[in-house]
Structure formats: C-alpha cells, structure tokens
Length: 179
Image 1: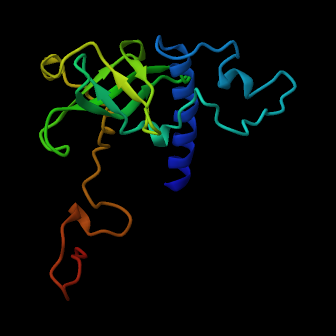
Image 2: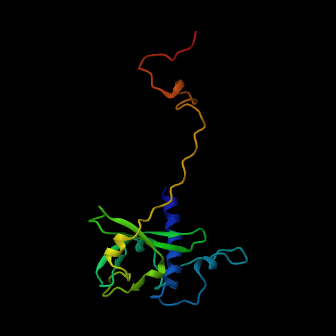
Image 3: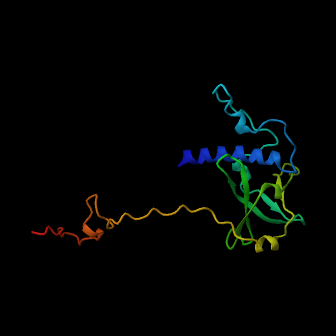
C-alpha cells in the first residue's frame, strides 16, 4: 500500500508541475515536460534531482486554498484528476460545509485557476473567477467506480472447504454426509 502511495505521489507531482507550467498565471518554461525527459532514446533514465521554484509537489498541492473573485477562501484542492498520459484533466475542489462535513466536490480544468503567490513565506493559492454560490450550484464530481465482477453462479461459501450453501453450522455439529 505504501509503495502504491509513493508511486501515486511521484506521478502526481510530475503532472502538477506540467499543468502549472501551462496555466495562465505561472511563468512559462521552454523545457519539455518532465515525462518527456524521463526516457531518452538511449533507454537510460534521466533523474530529476531537485524541485524547481515553478514546480509543486502533489503532497503539498493537496489542501491548497482556492479563493473566489473577492479573494475570500471558497474551498481547497482535495484531489487531482489526470489521464493515462499524465495530463491533468481537473483539480477537484471541496466547497461548502464545515471541516469537510456537508461539503461537495466539484472538478474544474487547470486553466480555470490563476496561481496567487504566497506572501511572507505563505503557501501559494489558487484563484477562481467563480463565487462560492456558483460552485455550490455546480454538478458534483463523481469518482469512477469500476463495475463489480459478475457472479459465477457458485453458491456463497461453496468451495475452499466451506459448508455447502455457505451457511454457518452450530458449534460442535458435523456437516451432513448423505449416508
């Protein structure tokens, strides 16, 4: 589980840095995306040895304050949605509620946000041109749920030594043998 979390965080960090480099409020970069740099033609990996000032780590990006047009906090980034190629499709923002209770999540593409640099060492923030009321009226973001596997027709508990029919027997009783 920890390995999956570490891999997910690393992938997320690469994707966030690419999206922020393309967003309207951030400095432009003439370097190719990190994903393109990671696998040169020779097959040897190029290692990224340090974070640049215009890059964000996914671990720090989650929880970033989202400000409305009046510079008041209207939510925080709760997740990042990206495709198989690493392109960030949306930032998922939790809005409304109190301490996460009663809040809803909406997803907006990265181009919807402007980056506001933090002052006096404070963290950067994201700004939207939408109000809290507009976000509350927006459609909820629904994460993908894979379909459940179809049943094979086997009775529950059948096989692997369970009692026929999958039921429980009273303690001390023996299974029926059909003698």
